[in-house]
Image (cartoon, rainbow, N blue to C red):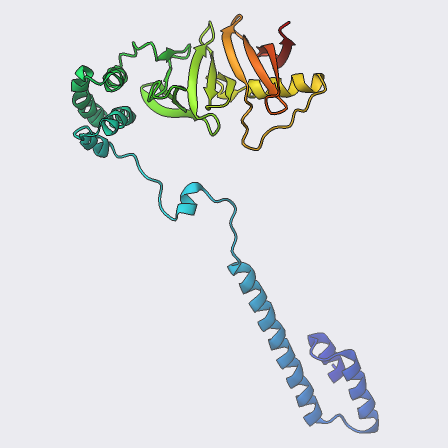
Length: 311
């Protein structure tokens, strides 16, 4: 094999240099010194290219990549774990607010039989408290922890589960905005509501106890959702949906506020059969300059929303 063919095969020298070498050989033999210089240059060039490529891939691999930041990630700390002993100690506090909070939080010890029995024993004396809010909280906590589920604030559904809230009616606006469920003797926080649904005002099961209507609220607005418990499906929020639907039909401004307050209110919520809910609502438009009183009907299985003005 000729030298130029060899150089082409191993790809060390460009065609122009090979031709130049050939031209030189015709006139004069190709200088070995010149060849060594050229090969040296090519090797240096090859090493530089490899170094740049390695640096690029290293940069790519070291580049900061974040797919999702959880609340715990942003705190740079693990999530706070439930500590029943902390709440048991709080029962000895001289601050009634601490005692009230501790009684409610101790219901969360339900899944640990040892802690549950300990909490049950510690809470029972508070049933006799002179503070009505503390006494009522203790009565409810004992009902849950003992597995009686006889309170009027416990809702029994067709699948054998029970639903309830904690901190029942602690505010003028309602209860804590977390919906709890016990099924197969396991307690879980089934669903929680974000602002502006700061309180749970009302829970109304359907006649067949397969669905539940939830009324949540802030100090400015009220909201309604229907939950299919077995399928873990929830309807659209019905008050704002009604406000937008009716407003659009009437040619009114239906912009939604960034804080999601609707300045609208609900009354006389009731089930009409197992899968249709109806309620009256006062819908707000133009920053409450316009109030429309309507009847809202929602057919759950058909996902059909009807809004009619009350004349």
